[in-house]
Image 1 (cartoon, rainbow, N blue to C red):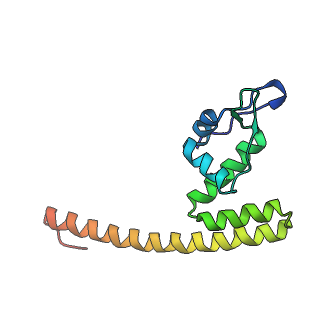
Image 2 (image 1 turned 120 degrees about the vertical axis):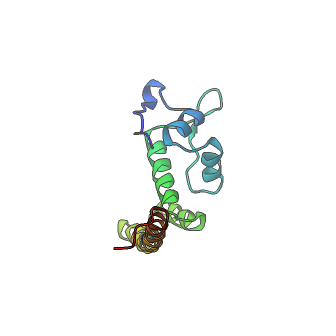
Length: 135
C-alpha cells in the first residue's frame, strides 16, 4: 500500500473515490461495499454529489484494508466499526484487536509449518534431480 496522500478538505483537495481507491490499493467497489455494510462511514459529498475522502476517511479505510489483509472477516470488521461508532472504550477496541492478533498469529504459525514442509519437499526433489544423496 502506498503512503496516504495528505488531504486538505479546507482547500478542496479531498480525494474522489477513484483516487482514494488508488491511494489505498483497493477497488472502488470495495470502498462502496465497506460503506454499504457500515464498516466505513459514508464520506461527505462535494457540490457535484461525488464522494470526497478527507484524511480521516482515508485513515479509516486504510485501517479497514489492513484488517482485511490480516484476514479479519466482514462480521468482525462490522463489530469493530460498530464498537467504534457506539463510543466503546479504547480498552474494548483493544481487546477486539488483540483477539484478532491471536488468530493472525495462529494462522501465521500454521503457514510457517506448511512452508517448512514445502521447503523439505523442494529440497528432496532437488536432491533427486541432481543425484546427490541427502546429507
